[in-house]
Image: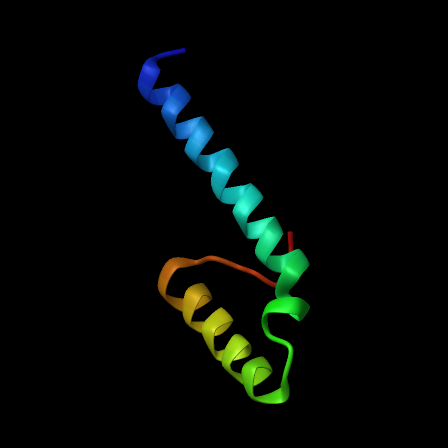
Length: 57
């Protein structure tokens, strides 16, 4: 495995861990009705622009 492949795999692992953490803590981070609406809007934007789905691990 090359050095760049190792860097890519580490970055991908870190991204997945961060994504899971955001999903697990979403109720703590966005803990009000107003923030819940903003969360949904942010999730849709991330999905549409970058194909990042924060609804499922």
